[in-house]
Length: 138
Image (cartoon, rainbow, N blue to C red; front, side, top):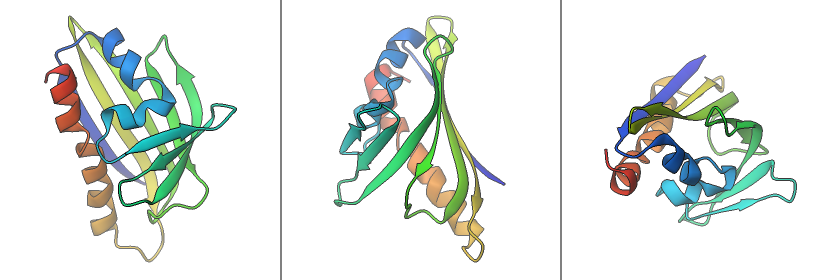
């Protein structure tokens, strides 16, 4: 099982960060690689639109406003050579600041080069850092 993790301390209270980053459909509000995010009628599947015109889908597994955490998985076909992918977004209070954590566990598809796949996914997660710092101070 492979893992990627991005964590950043932000200079904004957790509840304010969660108000922006907590809604499942708001990924395009804080990640620069997502140009638009559409939510299914039942609120469980988000369709991600990338600047190059490609799309991907993710399914919400759990969402807990009190814990400021949600968990999701890939849904449908994916361009990433992974399986059993589960990701968690968590915002944790840290005094007047907060800790933003985004991590995923997954298996690399047999035959795909793990030494390339894991860093590729890590770069996707790390790409959120500049926007989060700019919006919330870091």
